[in-house]
Image 1 (cartoon, helix red, strand yellow):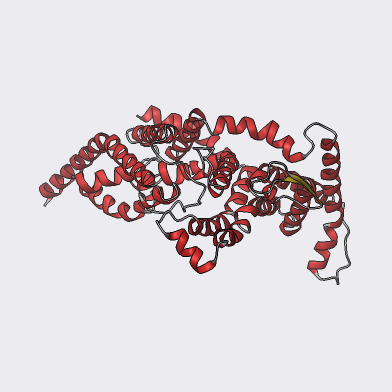
Image 2 (cartoon, one colour):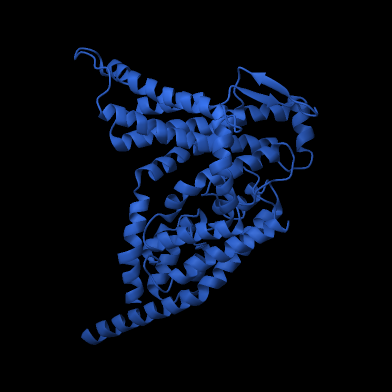
Amino acid sequence: MSKFNSILEEKVMPVAAKIGAQRHLLALRDGIIATMPFIVIGSLFLILANLPIPGYADWMKSIFGPNWALKLSYPVDATFNIMSLIASFAVAYRLAESYKVDAMSAGTISVAAFILSTPFSFLYTPVGAKTGVMVTGAISKAYFSSKGLFVALLIGILATEIYRWIVKKDIIIKMPNGVPPSVGRSFAALIPGFIVLLVIWVIRLLVELTPYESINNLVMTILGEPLKLVGLTLGGTIVAELFVTILWACGLHGTNIVKGVMEPIWYGAMGDNMTAYQAHQPLPHIVTQQFFDNFVHIGGTGVTFGLVLSMVLFAKSQQMKNLGRLAFAPGIFNINEPLIFGFPIVLNPIMIIPFVLTSIVTVIVTFLAMDMGLVAKPVGIAVPWTMPPIISGYLASGGHISGAIMNVVNIIISFFMYLPFFKMWDKAKKKEEDALNAGETKTA
């Protein structure tokens, strides 16, 4: 055990810590997190537009007219379908902050660069029409939604790196001391902003000469599609979850570290499912952000709700009884730091085994159940990760009872996988307490 702990401490933790602190990954994570409030708000309206209650649609139609569902989609467009725009600003803002340059200027320049990289024409096909119409002088909202997320993230990083380099080289317009700071910062951003937009403009012109026609098509073809093929498969999902749990077992926030790389893929898949769900078409993806938040990480990373139940029902040692009571309420809302660091699971060679294996098993079972059509796929509704289990599965699957049943199945799997390891750990703790009590009795 001590050798195992030494390997984790000396080999794994330093590398994982460096990855977790990498400024670009942190900026990507924070940029995507900035979109979450809007996605959740949009999800609420999406739920209202698609409540699976008999007679609900007719009741809404009688009150708000035949276009009631269309009107409920307006807030969805203003939230879901601007996620890339928000991310382009937030990523640049956070990255500029880490470089200690003007974050506001970097963010606004990034937004302008992102819009410049986006095609100003698109093919519009009306519902029921066989042919589309080319619309010019406008930007498709799809490019501001999940479809443009990869480009938004890349532009946010590229624009900020160019901006930072120019500012550090002191190639800026400097105003006299009497000028207000806000005005001075605006003029200081002129040259960096011009160069950033010039670079993106030239890249766009060059890409338009290729068969890809736009930066979005280029990025999605060369970068996005291969990542999707890996990240949305069962094998890729297992690897991602394996990294999440191993990093947590080393005391690092594995969820945030892995999300920095995988979130663009998972959110893109979520957007695809949401679009298909709105159009009442088959959902294209199984693995989305909700796959992890609402089906796998029940009780938190490691599917630890089963461990909490084991502690509450079978704990013999006083330490485990008290910890079980303490961890139960947070566990209902998928918060498991009391277990991760209080049990502890971190660097615990006994509990690391079920912590990792339970996650992998639930990923496999959930994926296969959805792939075989036994359980409804996540429909793209952003159910908060703190939503209690059973309710979260029901909502994430678009009000399908199979989603709630899947939550129950995963809790049962978690319970039985943790139970033998917990009993072994609890027995050792009980012996320690008995020995301590016996020593105190003799002393008395």
